[in-house]
Image (cartoon, rainbow, N blue to C red; front, side, top):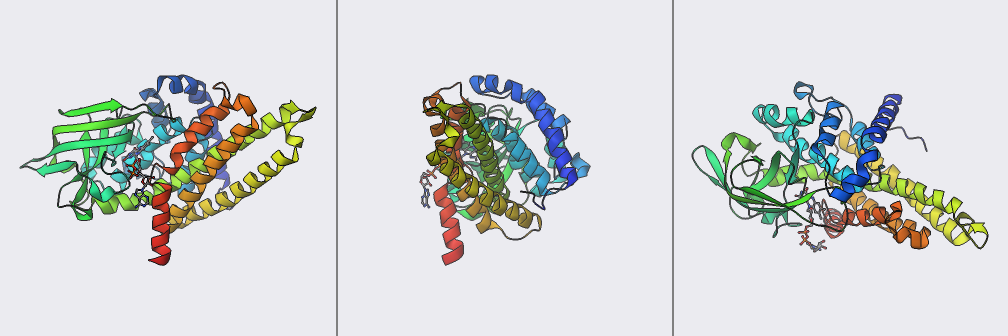
Length: 379
Ligand SMILES: Cc1cc2nc3c(=O)[nH]c(=O)nc-3n(C[C@H](O)[C@H](O)[C@H](O)COP(=O)(O)OP(=O)(O)OC[C@H]3O[C@@H](n4cnc5c(N)ncnc54)[C@H](O)[C@@H]3O)c2cc1C
C-alpha cells in the first residue's frame, strides 16, 4: 500500500541505504552474531555515510531531515536478519545522541554530539540499574557534588553497547529520593573507576549488553546535561521516540520474517502440495498480514503526530505494546511454518524467534505500557 508519508526523496534514500547495508553490513552479520559484538568500524561507516546525522543540527554535522528518514533507517536495519545488529547500531544515535541533541550544552555537543554524528565515537544510554528497571524514579547511582566535579558511585545494568561505548549518557541521583532528584550527565568510559562486564543473553547476540560499575568516578560539572534534577522528565520525553523506534523495528522485522516464511511455504512440499496450499496455513498468513498492515498504518500516523509535536505519550505506549507483542506472535508462527527446520540454527527463523522476545521488555515492558495507557484513559 502506498502511503503519504514517503516522498520520492525518501525512496531514493531508502534505496541507497539498502545498497549500503547489503554491501557493508549484511555479509558480516553471521560472524558478529557468533562473536557477540559488532566492530567499531561498522559504527564508523554509518557515521561517515551521514546516517547518524538524521534529524540533528547542521552546526554539529547533522541534517535537518524529517522523522521518516529515521524511520527508514530503523526499518532497513531491521531487515538485515539480526535485530541485535539493528539495536546496537541504532541505540547510539536514537538513544545517546538524541539526549545530547535535545538537552546538551554547546560544549557537550561539540565534544560528544559532533564526533558521535561522524561515527568517530560511540555513546549509549545508561538508565537501568539492578534495582531500578521499570521504576526509573528509583535510580540509586549517586552523583555527589564536589567543588569542580561530581563523584559517581553505583551500577547500571543491561546497557546496550555498554562495553564498547566511549561515553555514557547516564541517569544519576543528584537530589532526594524520587522523580525530582535525578539528573542526566555524560560519563567517559575511560574515566578512572569505571568497570564493565558483558552479559550473556537469550537473543540479540550481535548486540553487546553490559553491566557497568562506577567506583568514585570523577565527572566534570560541565558534563551535566540540561538542568540539575530534571533528568526524569528528559527521560520520559525521550521515551516517546524510543518506543516508536522499537515499534517500527518490530514491524519491519515482522515484514521481513513473513516474506521469508512465505518463500519457504512456496518451496516446501507436504502431501504432494506446497505448504502454501493448505488452508490452515493460508488463513494464518492472511490474519498476520491484515494485522501487520493495520499496525503499520497506526504506527506511521503516530510518527507524523510526533513530528508535528503533538502529545503522543499514550499512542507511543499503544503502538509499542501492540507491535512488539504482534512480532512475538508472528515470529512464533513463522518458525512453525518451517517445522523442524525452523528449530535449526542454519535457518533464519530461529534467530528471528529469539531476537523478538526482548521487544516486550526493553524500552518499557508491556505491563508498563498498559499502565501508561490505562492511566491516560481512566486516570
Ligand atoms: C537486551 C537488553 C537491552 C537493554 N538495553 C538497555 C539500554 O541500552 N539502556 C537502559 O537503560 N536499559 C536497557 N535495558 C533495560 C530494560 O529497559 C529493562 O530491562 C526494562 O525496562 C525492564 O526493567 P527490569 O528488567 O528491571 O524489570 P522489572 O522492572 O524488575 O520488572 C519485572 C516484571 O515486573 C513487571 N512490572 C514492574 N512494574 C510493574 C507495574 N507497575 N505493574 C505491572 N507489572 C510491573 C514488569 O513488566 C516485568 O514483567 C535493556 C534490557 C535488555 C534485556
